[in-house]
Length: 144
Image 1: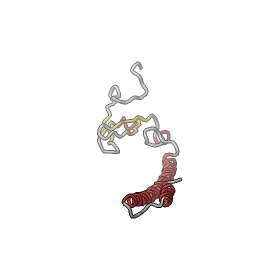
Image 2 (image 1 turned 180 degrees about the horizontal axis):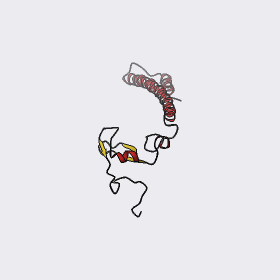
Image 3 (image 1 turned 45 degrees about the horizontal axis):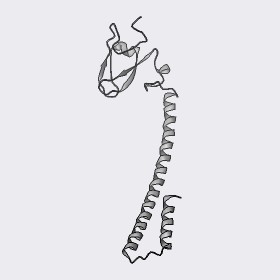
Image 4 (image 1 turned 60 degrees about the horizontal axis):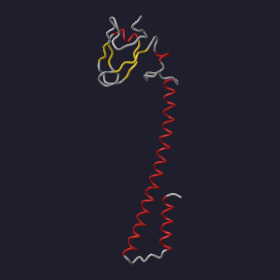
C-alpha cells in the first residue's frame, strides 16, 4: 500500500467510527485526516516527479557515455586528455597546475619547449629540464 491508500484507509476507519463533527475533538480529527490526505497527494506527486527526473538523468547518462566513447574512441588516458597512443608519440606526463589544481598531460616535445599555458586558467607553466626533472618522472630512478 502506498501513502495515499493508507490515508484513504484511515479516513474509512474514521467514517466507521461515526465521529461527531460538531465536537472539538471531532473537528480536530477530521482536520488531521484532511491534512494527511493533502500531504499524501503532495508526496505522491513528488515521487512521480522524481521518477521522471531519474529516468531523464539515466537517459542523459547513457547519451553522455556514447558521446565520450565517440569522442575518445573508447579509450581515454587516465589524465583525461584523450587516447594517448593516437594523439602523441612518446610518453605522456601528468602536470598539476599550481594555480588552479587542474591536471594536464604533456608530452616530451612540450617539456622540451620549456613552457606552456594551463588550458584551464592560463597560468604559464615552466619546465626546467637541465639536469634533473623537477617533479617529473621519465621512468628513471635515482640509481640510474
